[in-house]
Length: 239
Image (cartoon, rainbow, N blue to C red):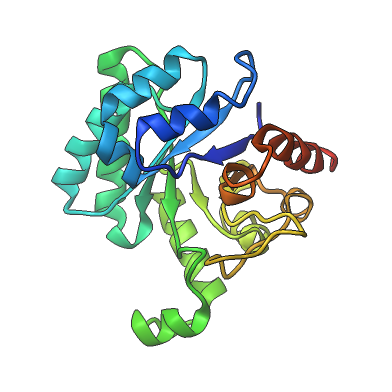
């Protein structure tokens, strides 16, 4: 699964998460995203349970703190054997490098493969006016995203979380193998909700995304497995 469809498990607890996952065939090799709410409720045991089912895991905690704290936290995350995890590029180069070092150290201690470290540039719920007015960032949104992507690449990160519209610019400023994972994916028939820069699975594929994160269009569908298969089919239709 080089370019995965990642299901965002945005549920409040394990009971609701398991009820959702029971709707998928047991041999379906899912790639799932665990966010703050579910992880803070269930803790590391959740990761162990999902890994035992053969799932790949994106642990999305968006770390942002002083370098020493981030390094220590990433060491713990590295020991869990997850596949992807996140950090805020706005924390700066020293923090990013500390996070990357901690992640690798933790993986080595646990004798597992290091997770891919993905930096947050600007949240997909943020538009340019908000960024400029609330964050006092004077450049355009694409410029801010490109800057953070370059900083992340120079600071030992493996890629970024970004809108599909930003991928071409990011890869031109970094490298073609620098990962661009895209949230805010919405099928054409779905509402955008709080995602300001949403695209369809096909559009993301055409823009050369390295993976897409899909939440409500799957988790709130009347038939989640059918919705997942439809999105996966659309995503994989572009070669």
